[in-house]
Image 1: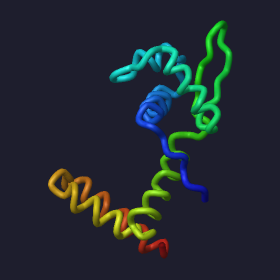
Image 2: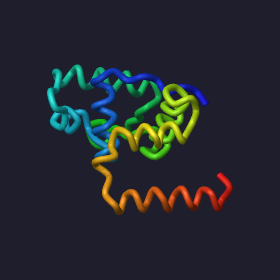
Image 3: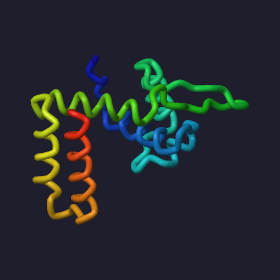
Length: 127
């Protein structure tokens, strides 16, 4: 597994928008940004993201429509794998412990039951 290419803040925001919408034009992305730079800066960043292999575009009339190269699930799994390897000594238990410590007061009884069920299922499957 190769480490994910780090994103700048602007690149991350653009990728988040494209993943959320599924596809988007530069104009839509520009409109969706919280503090948008110039329109040409958005287009330049889109070109960089294409060069890095994160986006592709197709022509629709006289505009480009951008799509993520990887599905959100695949990109998320890759980012999660990198996070676990880098910050949690490749340990799922360390990740879960950190989540429980930082969000314990925010977890509902239902969410705790779901976590218990997932752990029980993993035990049964020998994971």
